[in-house]
Amino acid sequence: MLDYFTLHVLALIFVAALFGGMAFFAFLFTPLVFKFVEREDAAKFLRQVFPDYHRVMAGMAIIPALILVAGHAYMVEVVSLLAVAAAFLFAARVLAPMANTAREAGDTKKFSMVHRVSIMLHMIQFIVVFVMFIRLAQ
Image (cartoon, rainbow, N blue to C red):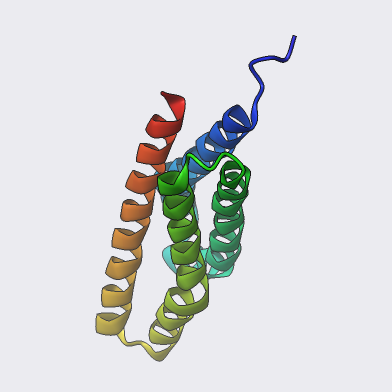
C-alpha cells in the first residue's frame, strides 16, 4: 500500500513545504501585513517575525537534506539545501539584526542596502529550492 512512500518522497514533501512557505511569506503574508497595518507598525511586527521565519525555514531545509544523506546519490541536493539553510541562518543572525539596527538608528541608506541584500538572498534561495524541487520530482 505504501510502496511509493520512500525517503526520497518524504524529502520531496519537505522541499515542497519549504518552497510553499517561502512563496507564502514573500508574496502573500508580507505584502498583506503592509496593506492592512500601518507602515511603522507593520515594520515593527515583521522585524519581530523575520528571525523566527528564518530559523523555521532553515530547519525546513535541513530536514530533507538529512533525509537525502542516506541516499548517497543526492549530494548536489544535500549541499544545496544545506547552503539554503546556512543562508537563512545568516539572515537571522546577521542581516536581520543589521537591518533592525539601521532602522532604529534612522540610517535609511544602510537599511535600504541591507534590505536589498536580504531580498536578493531570499530570491536566490527561492530559485535554488525550486530547482531542488524539480530535481527531486523527476
